[in-house]
Length: 326
Ligand code: NDP
Ligand code: GDR
Image 1 (tube, rainbow, N blue to C red):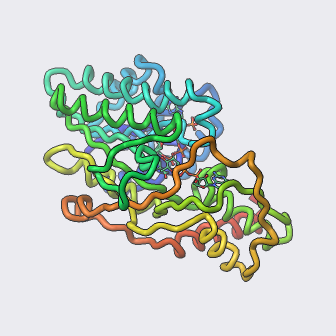
Image 2: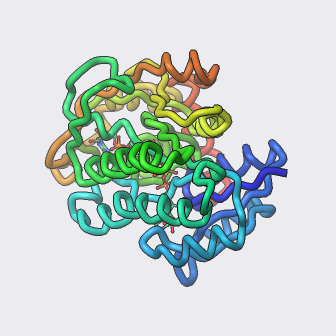
């Protein structure tokens, strides 16, 4: 039975990936941080077979212990400070966890693997935020990186460090350049979930309005359940590489609002939306649209869930949760 270790197990992707690997017959271990992590209970409820190890990406020794106690064949580094807006106010912490944390886990894997560095396969959660200021449309593995936030800069560091460990030590280290992916498990600070939850609450008469930032930005949104499959496929390849994972479609925040409100029968959504500069970013990523043809050709991967299906799935899940009083 193959064994996997996941950092970021309490996050959206960690939960979907754990479910996928358990279904495939893996023994799954997760790194969880903090003295009394409030999301531990969620992990224990959704994926009770996952074995949890205390650890933090900023603490090399804790990662070494997690590797010693789990002896993984595959390591998925999904842990990060992942909210872009937060990264300006907390640039140092973001750099420490999202940037230097990658060096820590790479170094821990290299040391643990000993004389055969490629014996443990490694996945790094890189991001379309690395493309930042628009240089080329659509964005591919060859597009120039021009990050626009401390988060994006930290991801670029982790991305190149992953490539460097592959080239320097022959590690089987792959990087997935994933575009935005969402689900009913998405954190409520991110725009799709903020909208799906507010639309459900407005429909049920529990809320009147939603306060938003920039409505013109465009994103290439896919379903998280599809994207974790791509992560796994990358690590099954004989050689490590970097892959863009995206749908190839882009939509604005206005289109997101139109679909979400439209799904509950509200056509004039502008009556319920107020813009506030507090939600505007110091530097915006205006347009993301990915070219995932390499993933399609090499990994045989393609997304299954489209934009409208994704957003309506999220609104329905929030309607059900609010009705149930969660
Ligand atoms: P989430 O924000 O849902 O999860 C982030 C995870 O990182 C949480 O489990 C969190 O744990 C953990 N974490 C935070 N700080 C530390 C730390 N110091 N040490 C160890 N773990 C830590 O993110 P997603 O699941 O959406 O994303 C997974 C990864 O993919 C992230 O690296 C993200 O940057 C990247 N990514 C995500 C995309 C997306 O659209 N979702 C697109 C491209 C990349 P805790 O519960 O303790 O806070
Ligand atoms: P993003 O996701 O920054 O792309 O990073 P987010 O959902 O936060 O923002 C997407 C776009 O929506 C605009 N926006 C708002 N965003 C939020 N959160 N709240 C608002 O009220 C709001 N109004 C408008 C933003 O300005 C932005 O243009 C996500 C994260 O998961 C990263 O970790 C990941 O790397 C990238 O996706 C790919």
